[in-house]
Length: 68
Image (cartoon, rainbow, N blue to C red; front, top):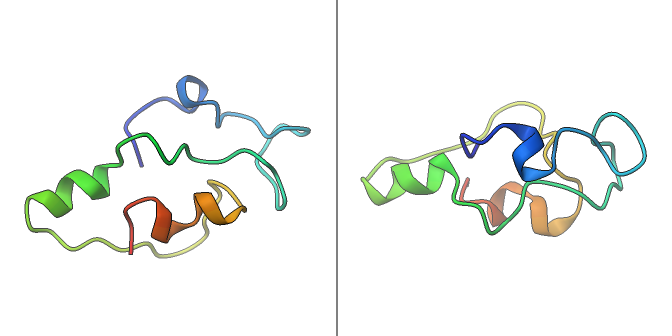
């Protein structure tokens, strides 16, 4: 979503396991610019289909990450 390697934005592993799981306190950093946000500035519409394994807390949901 950002173009960064997961290890650079602290999403390569979960807090307690080797993957991000439900109820994990980690997720896709809301402060990082997402590719979807850049595309929107150029007039594109973006969306997300399928599973979301980038955070289970409200601040990491798709509506908060520039994807609607």
